[in-house]
Length: 145
Image (tube, rainbow, N blue to C red; front, side, top):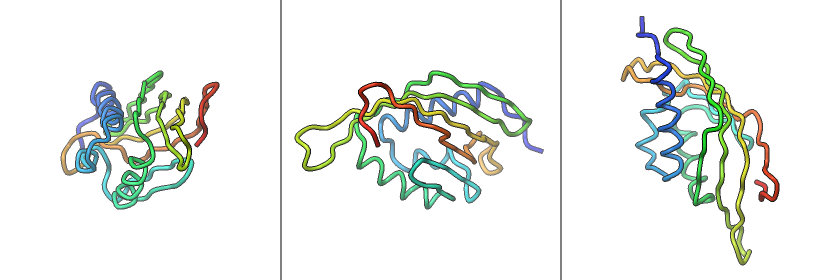
């Protein structure tokens, strides 16, 4: 039986995830944070299954969005042995340029998300196995996706 997750391990995973998104870390830096073939990620524009889908999605979005900032507003962790349910609100800001526009636009929104985190059988570290964006709540004056 896998060692139970701790709240601090899960909280660290959340922080690391968003830090890597902000700097557009290499794909290889994300893979240890994600479950293997069981991975399911639901975004407004797509549902991803597995690491290959994540790779395609990530390579696309880092070419669309820049100057990204993720600010955690709320994180609730419900531990369940070797897994955890995580509900969070993250403020996401990003710039986007839609050619032939003369200037980029700024997106500012709060993303309501639900994750399932489990301990990896391979590494023993916590990994995201399910990631769902429940809602996007735009701030006043924000550009839209």
